[in-house]
Length: 218
Image (cartoon, rainbow, N blue to C red; front, side, top):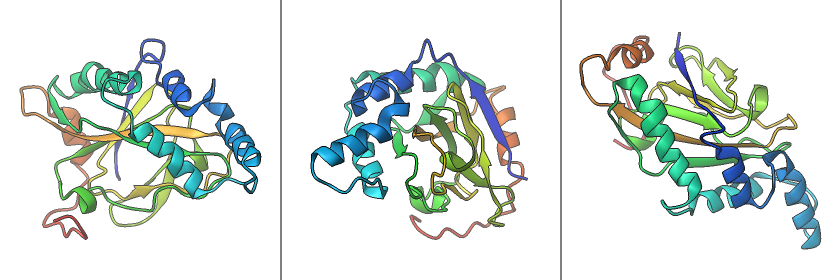
């Protein structure tokens, strides 16, 4: 069984949803799909949303400089919320991966293992939605390594879910809910220190024995 670990944080102290909404041109993220449809109608475009609309908004978030409040909030959450759970010192990706998955749009991520992209077997994956997620608007994770038995991992706004994304396949389904999901994810490695191993060891305990055959990114 592939394990996951939840970490809670204070959304009042770290208001990612409000900061991201401002970047995307809405007051609240639940207005995102409606705002995008209205924009397309004004431009004389077909009044439907698809994969490319999600990618366009995702690119807006990805282009934010390190000095932007969204990026600063990310760094603070990593350093003050996630790192202490893993002994207080981790090596992590300086730039997170942002994702947008509006209601009624197709999958934004195929089934994959992060190690096939990064070539790194030591990374853990952390996923933070800026809205409450469940069922088809959220993260889907296989339950056993290599089995492809995908199930949704419910994660609320104010939670970070950490899992072995390096070797456990995960991705998304078509969003058949009314939720406009905006999220970020990042990869990290706990630095060896006394008392830093238990959570990481638990997350990796179910891995099959090596060697591991990677499909890409060797």
